[in-house]
Amino acid sequence: MDSFTVNTRMQEEIIDITHHIRTVVSRSAASEGVCFIYTPHTTAAVTINENADPAVLKDILKGLGHLKLENLQFSHREGNSPAHIKSSLIGCSAFVIINNGSLQLGTWQGIYLCEFDGPRTRKVLVKIIG
Image (cartoon, rainbow, N blue to C red; front, side, top):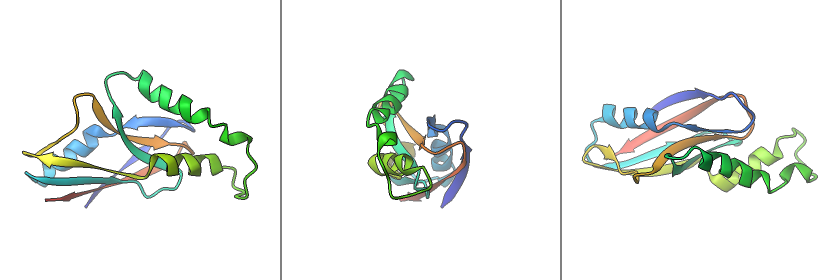
């Protein structure tokens, strides 16, 4: 298993980690298999989405913002319940098929770490099976 850290800069942001994941896959020498990407945090997430137009990432954050979670009364008193909910909605993991030593991402797909309670140092774990 490999891991790397990402230092986020904002309270909420979506960071392209595709290059990091491709590096792990190329070092693994796996020709066929599956790449699992996971973040062990409850206020961050991992997703696969559009990588050609950065406006899509802004729209994702804007759409999540329209949930108006900040206006709700929460039992959790740390003040970051909206971040926990957003992380649960997006999910903390993703997987991509490896074929001929390459991630089988679509033409317009990238792999992203979603920060919902930053800035923080986030860990991403990558496991290649194959």
